[in-house]
Length: 102
Image (cartoon, rainbow, N blue to C red; front, side, top):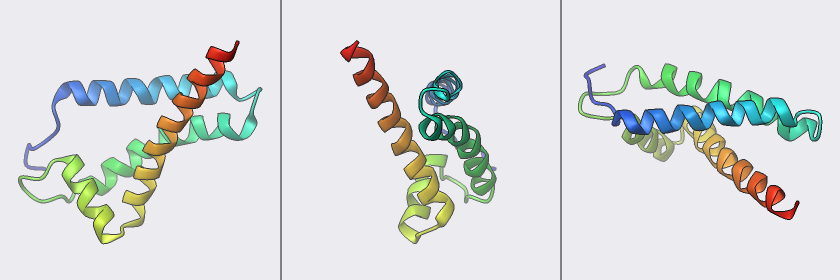
């Protein structure tokens, strides 16, 4: 790697969201097995896949730029990471809607 990376605050927020999604999945697996399982699997697999595939990025390119360029090329791992991010957003929106109804 060449030292180009996203700001630390972005990484802190990213990993806090992943950790809280994982914890939410552990607590919700009894209520909804499928969504709870996804809430556990995605926060574990997404950073591993993203890190392994970002190792070979070129100089002057941060992780987000690399992800976007790989999505444009059609790389399966980048599409998986993008859909995983969308699922996490959907999961938290759904979770907040359920909590408001009660």
